[in-house]
Image 1 (cartoon, rainbow, N blue to C red):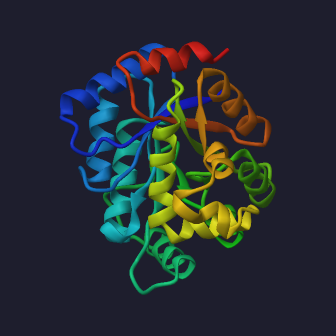
Image 2: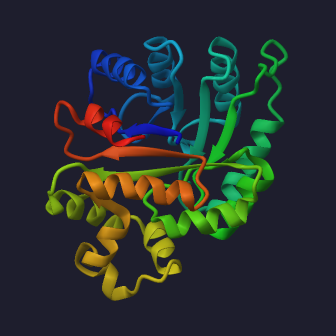
Length: 270
């Protein structure tokens, strides 16, 4: 069972990053993932987390391709791969205004692959490259041009579809939001944010069989139950469901984190 921690560090002091990395490593989690939204630059933050641990894998979930050039991204990935062999995963995603996501991401990957960095050769092993892929076409691109995919805000049914689309040889790391205690209002607030403000997530949920009624008013009970696991038993069951559906790794985003949340999460794992 490969399980990691996923979180936003936006606004968190660097000391908290270091403490979280040390705690995750001590508790036996395989990796720590973080999103890039309104906080530190992704590759700089990855370096801070890697330096604060000795064996933990650190993954961008995701580094936004619309925030930096392909050359800058490729150079950062190679540098981190050389400095921390086998411990860095480069998750890539984002949205470029006015551009089709598939076309924009394909062009970005072309730029990365064509990057001329004679003073910075590819490290060995080369860091995994994952794409934030939800729909069939982006999953196909992840199978063709990357080492796998990092879907976010998805139920196990999507994981099964993604595994089938990617094929058996690609790495599938799935984010799962959880609430350890019975607090359905926390789950509703989290799900409602994406249902209301993220058209690509609404499209993906419709593709999975959710209706306009499910998407209304921030999400139906059925939808929220599908994307956020509430209560310790459901959290453990949902992690297992993703793995049984074909995920190689599940990175868990604990919402409304009490002080001992990561220890409690670790205790749920066999």
